[in-house]
Length: 170
Image: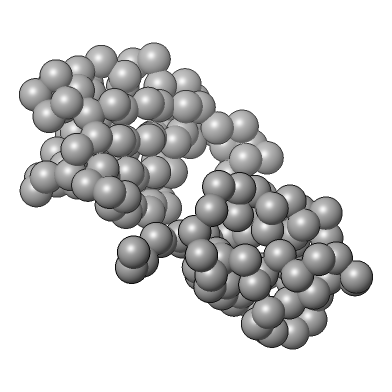
């Protein structure tokens, strides 16, 4: 997988990419430098979008002595979604920190989930082997487009690092 094309035909496979998916950003698979997972955990936040979600979640983490090391957030059809990788000096902070989010769960109607990370799940460097590629697919909307395209990419051992889909027009 060495070039950017549109549409793309992988090794005699049907031309899945002419059938309608928008903006897959991919990078070839790699093994990154792993860190110590001790005290690392993920925080997932989902709920109806409104101002102040990031401020409240980051306030709680700050007040609990946490450091946000990696984050991403987006809005999908009016639903806010955020994932954070956070460090706390205690080896198992999840059980102690989980109740601190009860306020935003009830007052803001958010689903907040904490998950302890193992050593091998924490990668600090974002170096990639090979070259990044962007694949854009345009076409009529239909069920199964994302599955069909990503199944083929997985078969080719392509690591998808960012995926954006959008139904446009009518």
